[in-house]
Length: 528
Image 1 (tube, rainbow, N blue to C red):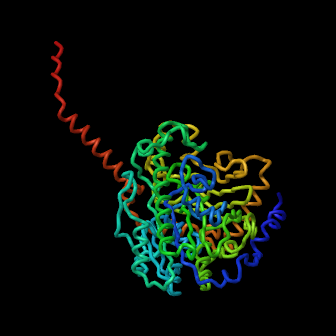
Image 2: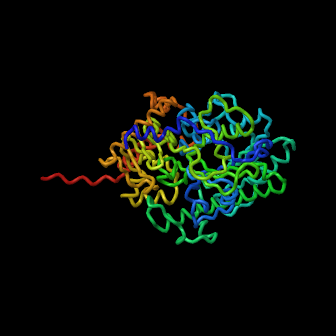
Image 3: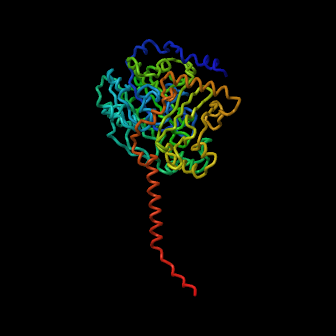
């Protein structure tokens, strides 16, 4: 594949096709929709939902939204970590365009407009329950509330497993609806704190799930411990799906379901090695379903590539507001209103990447990566292949959440250890069409050298157009941004060095003290 061929194939990205609306004139003139945005925390939904073919995790309410609306097969985040992804959703920008907010556990710059504020200015009631933007600090720029909106978190509920947050998400949504003016449309963010770790160990089996039902990805060892860990994760996914059902029931009871655009997605993949925080397909490929009775033809499946930065301009357009000039995402309204399935605007290219996530390397350096995803391939460029991608071994791979699967892989070593924690080459290439789990790197295969070169060139060209400091040779700025997370006291490399020094000195002192207290042997008699 030559660059000329690639550039011709990607031409539709540069020249957007505006499709005629497939809804009736009456629908097109309908009042502005309410918006209920529901986001999971760490859900591998693009493979772990019934609508996508999963049969061991039950998601009937997500599946209902997909069946009565649109299922998107190619939704992505430009950064597979909590706060960078959520910043992208709120601002409508790729994360490398967000300065401090490109880094996990950083500061949210006040200079960037966010869609909840803009929707509020346009007459919408806005609110948040659960997890909005974060972790990080939004106050330095003068913000007094989470960028996702004012919080409604007073109500709690009983939960089936101790790892699940007790927030009554639907109940707090109803409380928000009760307090807003009746004639105002609303834009509400429901942010589950699940299936983020930690889990109640063994909760999956305790609640009736079976180890033999689990489909273990090829990048994990197939052991009973790993299967049990995945079942504990599944319990929390299914709990969240039940909350979606309750939220839909609240809208139905109030006669507002058909007038509400309901969106369900996640911020990135599951909190397991190789996935969360890593530039692999399961890390940044997201679930996405939308339902809007008065605006979406049901039963559709859309193949076009969608980025989370497209949500903000979409919501604003539906509210009758021009997208903010800072926003670089592209509205999805044409895809929503089209009556077609398949490839509608032929959006078939996506950029993704990351900077510093959690700590665990000398100087608190990140592991910068950029990648380009096409219909067939995922090309990845690791800017510093001499660094450890999930953090250093001595700091316990700080950019990988702790849990049983992590401990199994560390104990076994070998192939699975290298996949999740080992150093990676500068270039990686995966043919997603036959290797969606990204375990066969083709970058060093001579048959794919032209593909690697073409994709690298196109990726860097697009990143330069977007003003990415990393592509412009100014990437060092990302490592200067402050890390504000409390986990610095556990994961910071300087903290590890200090603890090591203290333990070494303590051990030396103990040895000297023991030597001083040791009984002295009797002197040997002098020889005559």
